[in-house]
Length: 554
Image 1 (cartoon, rainbow, N blue to C red):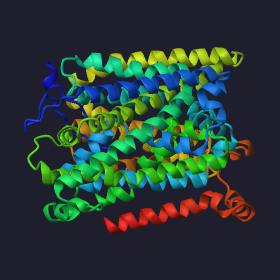
Image 2: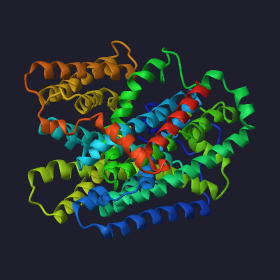
Image 3: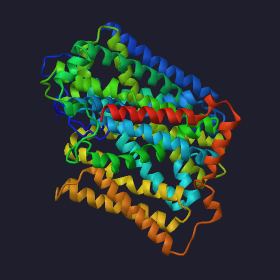
């Protein structure tokens, strides 16, 4: 199969469309770099690697390596949360969906801000005081070791064979637009090694601080590309004249194929809770914070950073309809805007932001998977291992996962539609996790037997529905609606078994459930210290801004 004919699935917030990679697009745009742009990119990569290697010298314990010594401050937490989520495929997917269907895809980013606010308000105090290393560890303390191992294995599998491999493959395809002389596996290997070098040596601290650099680069590059796009289009008034009104609306009819309003209020929040509240990649940053307040403020900062995504990543794709109304492939919008509109030097900076998004996803998922293996399995079964030995195992596991991703990623192009189904199956697998997490966190009546049955049978139902709907095409249900159905079934099963099994949870297990006393404590703290230091003030401001954006772009 030649490189020009390879296709990939772009997982841009549930955007599942093919991207045909060529040297030039249908409009004759050739993707080439000047020497200055190449130097800027090379310097950026060199700085990222050197920063990660420098930070690797500070590790003394497993807590240093896997949780950055639990000393991370809120600005770095917020920037790292943002960067680890904004992969290069999401950049391309957001702009592509903005071009193809309008701004409704932004609802994923809008919902992320809301979920992060709830995570900061309800979850962070409990998981922080529990001194966890991993989120699956929460399930063990609340339910049983079986739930911990099950969720940990599921997360590791998805991290390596879905997130990391797909990120490597999709990013490599876009980068090969600029360097078509490279074979796809060469590009994948280079990207993995660059991100893997500082991740293996520096652990979470290297990931977080390089993520902060990458987030700033990504934001600056996105702002520049949105400004150049809007100027070239003739301003906002021209855009509103030429773009259909429905393309500038977040809320779409129930029959919409992208984000129906019924899925917006049901399945979309569930997928958001999975990613932002139960995902080890996200939780690991919060667990590394130096205090509850820093963890909360970091989440709120990340939520604020998600809101401008509409203006700097989605709308440029929609505005591109004015400039390039006849693009054959919507997923080429982002690279087209970069290479067509940006001057020398600025192009190198923006492309560095694109590479930054890719590296952030790779380093985050590799470090997360390594932490799960080391702390959920190795330390559990070998409790006498020294801190140094655990760190060395963590580095070795990161290397193995990097190697597995590099070997697997080039094969994805040969799977065609099967790979597309493989990506969408995420929506069929995670609702049971959300059901058990919510049930265990807020309801003391949930017990271990109900939790494990809810997880296992919920996944069995999800796989069965995936085969019936996605593979056999016997009937159609939007995947957001499927998520809601699976969540309801899993929660009802967990609740039914918990109420009838006669094995209530213990008081020790109740210590990791949410209590209304936390809210009382929050109000007491609000009275004691300066108001401007309390997270709730910024939380209220965040909610006001989210409501305003929804109202303006309803």
